[in-house]
Image (cartoon, rainbow, N blue to C red; front, top):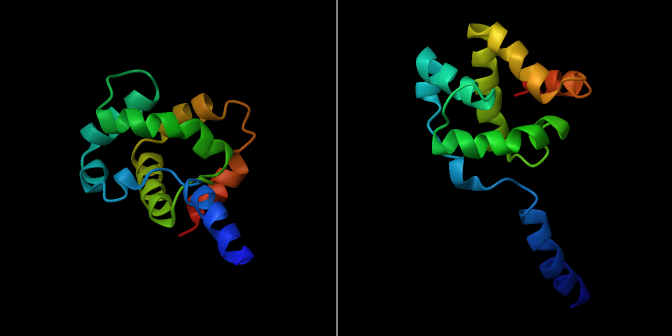
Length: 120
């Protein structure tokens, strides 16, 4: 009985350690296939352009995701994030460098985040 009660108490805190699953089914194909959209998101994240409602939500999570190497991301979210990051790195290395400078100016998290990006 004690184990069951402990499970009920601990389970909600474990489940809330992840970001909301609201965007788990977000269609990233338009981002990956259309530079205009990809750069629009990038400009939003860099405070250089307007943000869609989704981009605003993603932007709020960036600092913590960088610091914790996406520690609160579900496996599905990690996969989606890696795909988008790789697209930015490949198609727009300049923009990627600006994002790194903005969110990890001292490069404290760079090695861990580079390793994270290579996974999958």
